[in-house]
Amino acid sequence: MTTEDQQEHRTGPGTGEAIRGTARGTAPAPLSILDLATVGVGYTPGQALAATTELARRAEQWGYHRFWVAEHHGMPGVASSTPAVLLAHLGAHTTTLRLGSGGVMLPNHAPLAIAEQFGLLEALHPGRIDLGLGRAPGTDPATARALRRGLAEGADDFPLQLSELTHFLDGDFPSGHPYERLTAVPRGEGRPPVWLLGSSGFSAQLAGRLGLPFAFAHHFSSANTIPALDLYRTSFRPSAVLGEPYALIGVSAVAADDETAARRLARSAALGMLRLRRGNPGPIPTPEEAEEYPYSPAEADFIDSWLDNVVLGAPGQVADGLEALRKRTGVDELMVTSHIHGHEARFRSYGLIAEAYGLTATA
Image (tube, rainbow, N blue to C red):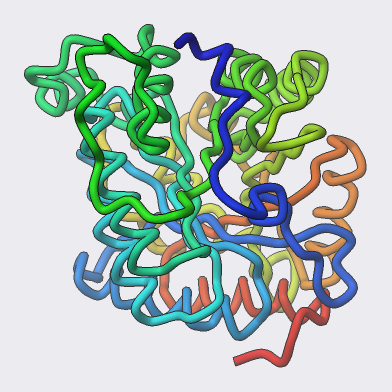
């Protein structure tokens, strides 16, 4: 079966409802969170993971719709290297919040292994799991090679890997297939909805052809957002999963008492990204370090460009900025991420955004 045939597959009863988010409070669209288990200077990975767990609990209380974690490797500022493990833990500390991968980098793994991991997650937390898939390595080339040792495929074979994974999830390899008798266990009556993630047009077009939901990484590829979303919508073919396109975008957002305070927090993330792009990743620097860093003209331009793509300010400013972005892109859901230094600052940023929309009583 080719990837074109996947549109005939379901992810279980109520698939469309599991995909479509719920707008709460005064928010015109569902609001969700993308978290990277941020490790800042002066914190340990254990502290970062404990903070992510607390953030998931608060996100559920605040009224965010879903909470995704992302696979990254070789980045000291990110502790979410294995989404399935972290999601199992977060599921045990929440009750209604949708949890998912934003995403699992499929070329790094055997499709059977992912089918088993997310089948297990679905069995543990039925009806709450999303399986977001990306085709990038989520790391540098050397680490990618180490991760993929023994795997013949790479990112270029993503459609075939996706097809194989879907067959494992559905237990329906065609007669005569080498894996016809293999079963990914545990496997219940339903299975997690599959999302395709992307920062360019490849996954956008593939998601459209397969009738799958699509998540675009606006937070680090804003120039490609509109073209990718247009490609997704024009490529979309109705499927048993979705009758019409459903897209969300990841958005960097930082809320604080005022714009000056929010920008100061956001600059720490910008300096962290600058170092990552220079091949020198590390924990997220403090706002003080970001203020004192001796930027060259080129580095200052990078920081300014990065901050231009962050929705920041007082809570009302952030809400207005997110709504302007939603209208400009026409997306169905916004997934905010505050990859900043300091756990309390992150908690407060997400809490202020929730408060601005009146999602629920704040924690």
